[in-house]
Length: 240
Length: 314
Image (cartoon, rainbow over all chains, first blue to last red; front, side):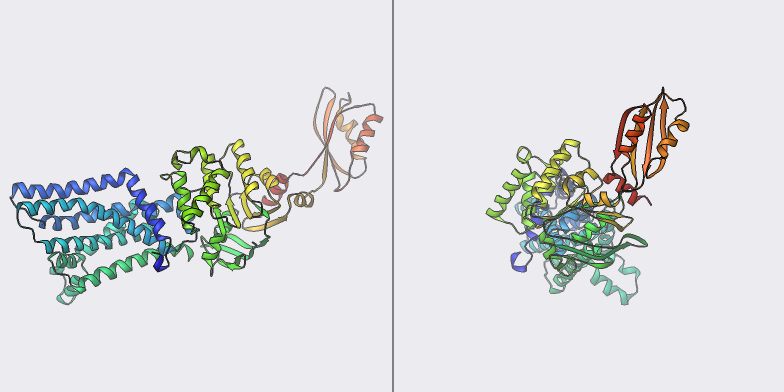
């Protein structure tokens, strides 16, 4: 991070990761996440006799709706409530460094949560045939989609000092993004293609199918950038 | 490292928290910021530390404007906010390292500085303890340690001794005095003895306005109003209002005499006289001439408390 002239992203990132793994809350959330995915994966395996990663890639985006707001809600709201944000922002630290440090920390937690699910991929590989391409792009898609959600959650957390409110705000924004292409039947055709392009699930399923299109990457990248920008602006709001 | 505040005004919506305050703090000065709760002390400090900008006015720290050169200003300032917010899930050493890193201190110099601050602030016995498990006194020391980790030239301490027990207050006060040498310090408080004990200069603000500025001694003198002498006499008279008060009234420069109490021939009076006069000798002679016994006589001195009270309750 030195290269970008943002020397404080590192320390903030490390503190945040430490604080995630020091508290039982993170482990609880991770265990619940893995339990839900594992239950559906194994019931598919034993009841339907199907060894497939499809269930993982279909289910994780749904679980993300709750999981990501839960891991991002405290990022800024808690520091606002306890007053440590005042201390942090009166150190020679840029607001963007605070946002980036916290963003990467949550992203690492997300990665740490997704890693154990690779076991399912190994299981599928042992029991049947595993097509490596779609698994790789599927995980890439999950990681990108999770990143966008985290950035949105961070923005929501910057709006309030109440973690529950932060959870609800990020859940609603994410839900809206997620549902956009589920309502295509009910909107005029002229709007449909725009809505579809704005829907996050549309881009994710494209990637998860094994096709990495620049359109999808640009979508994720710009949404990520926009959310992080909004979070930074919202943090700077105290200066207005 | 001088701080200059010019025509500072801060409004929260309709409410004016700080109203046109101007002052300067010279290098090495310890400035006490005094005022009742809600007077605008904390707001002023939050502005100087770049937490939030003023509505109007200019603040400069060592020539750097807080708005345009915020990062430079923040590098020079060590800040202990009100309520001393800390990360309760970190231990002391980790927290100080984090603070050092945010000030650009890494590696050897950081370790050196952390060791120094742990020593100076007396944190050795708790250095591996989580901050959440520590007593308030130790937390306050951690707060001071983090504020000074980067050897700032300016220290801004918002009620550094609030919530501490009397022994801890003395400890923290000595620490501030010791560490504040050769630094510019602004500290806010509503404990007046603290100001008298630590500060070179006092600013009293009330309702967002500055009402006094000077050394504690200067303020005491300046706001020293009429003199009052308290007198206790054993006279044996039954009606002191008739038999004693007129005599006292007749003394030079006396403006008023009030009877505080009378029982079994012993009576207490307050004698109010004009500013700058001393009635004690005459009062003594009067008592002797009448054959009464003088039990007690003392002159009341204006305390900083009274100055404060006078200035902040209008």
